[in-house]
Structures are given as C-alpha cells and as structure tokens.
Length: 349
View 1: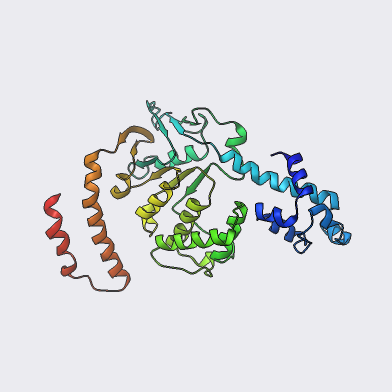
View 2 (view 1 turned 90 degrees about the horizontal axis):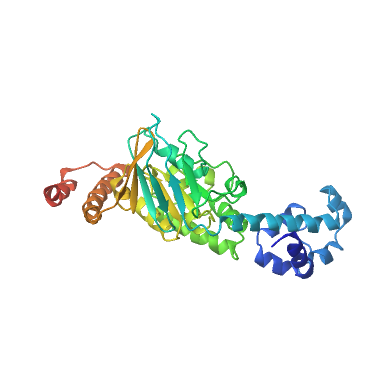
C-alpha cells in the first residue's frame, strides 16, 4: 500500500477498526493526546471534536494529523515488506588475513542452520559482521552476500527499521526502565500483531523455558541477568521478530537451554548462522563453516556418524549441567555424582 491507499483507508474506516488492524496506532494517538477520541468515528470525523489548542501544542492541524498518521502506518508496513520473500542468502568468498582468496561459495535457505567454528580470534565474528551488513566487497574480507541470488539494493541493505538481520550477541544490555511485560507488549505492537497482550504472554512463557533462573512479567528488563536477557531476546526473535536471518554469537556462554533455543529458532523457518565452540550445537547444524586466519577454510556437511555421536555428547552435557546446578545451589560435589559418567560413557568414546 502507498500513502494514498492508507489515506483512503483512514478516511473511511472507524478508528476502532484501525486499531484492531494496527495496534501500535493507539500509541501514536496517545502520544499526541488523542487516545480518548471517539473510536466509533473515522479519524477525520473524530478530529472535528478535538480542541485545536491540543493540536497546536504539537504543531499539528486536523489535516496534518491524518497525513502524519498515514505516513506512520506506511513506514511500518514498508519495514514488513522489505523483510519478506527471503528464500536464500549466499556468501561469496573474499580473502583471509594474508590476502589468500577464499575459494568458497555457500547458500543457506530458511530452516537451515549453519555453525561457524574456529579458534578464538580466527574471524568468526567478522563473518557474522559481513552477513549483518550484507557486505558487497566493501569490508576488510572482500566478501559479498547475496539475497535470493542477487546483490541487495541500497534501500534493503541500509534500511534503518525492520532490519533483515537480527543478531544475538554475547553482550546484551537494556537501557529502558520497562517491565518484561511492558517491553514485550511494546514490541508486539510495533510488529502490528493482532493481540499484543497474548503475543507478549506467549513470548514470556517461552523465554522462561529457556532461562536457567526464572523471572516474572513484572521484572524490570534492566534487572535481568545476562542469561535471562538472552532468553528473552531469543524468544522475542523467534516469535515476534520479522528478521528472516538470525546471527548468534557463542550462545553456549549465555546460561540458557541452548539446545531448546536453537530448536525454537529453527522451527520458525529462519536462516540461522551461529558462531560456536560447543560440539553439541556445532553438530546439530546442517553445515559448518571452518574459519582459519580470518578466512573460510572449508565447509563441512554434518555426517550421519557425527549426528549419531550427539547422543553421547548430550548425555555428557547433562551430567555436566547437573554438576553446575549442584554448584549453583552451594552443594558439595561428590564422587557419587561422577561415576555415572565413568561407568556409562568413558568406554564408549
């Protein structure tokens, strides 16, 4: 839809109906003290009963309110349209730190998970950054990232709102003094979901299944621990974010149920690339990119033998997780907790 189409819709549709279609619009009206206008009228009709002094306070007229409102709706709809229709991303090789060419090309489709492995400092984060900025041979690595097999235009590449790529980094801090419920509902409204409260509740429940330490909807987001923050943002990304491409930097350090987190994101048909040192995560991916000296050294497809080893790795991980939980509680670690691992698994590896 363009501005003219929104103008027609706003001019002929009751405000109550518009708010059902675009929940965030209620915040727009409230911000200019029009939250209590008659919702059974169209916006132009309702504005006839509004004191002009209120509008002048915001430098508006009755006509300009309608035009600004239409521009507001248009801006959010464009963000959604820009993010739609991503059927693949392709990474074309550049060069490593020594200038050696990367003879590599890899295409990733929705629902597919690709892990990125390599020593600390090898260039895993640089690859994530190339994807995040949709590099076009203009970063230090000289790589190029294609969308649906073609170079993205500048509008899509440099869009400031509704970005194509969401990144879950190791460090995450909130600056808004909102409760978890307020934060989620605000985000749900910005995504124009039909029932922001219900969406926020689903997201909250999901986040708590991932977090090691539970939190409540009334917890301030600034009071969340690092693990709780990442659990919240992973649930938010999976259930609300319109970004079709998700980049994850070392989720194993987040203090959350990382296996469930990856499963959650993958179930929502997003393209996922994650930097990791964790074999449990790396082998769950469909492919893995091996980084050496700043360059992509090779791309491996996870073998059936590697997938079969996941059962053993998962059992060892559960034992370690159990020991971590005992340490958190202040318990003493005893040999009785460890022999299970020795008896059952050492001989199988």
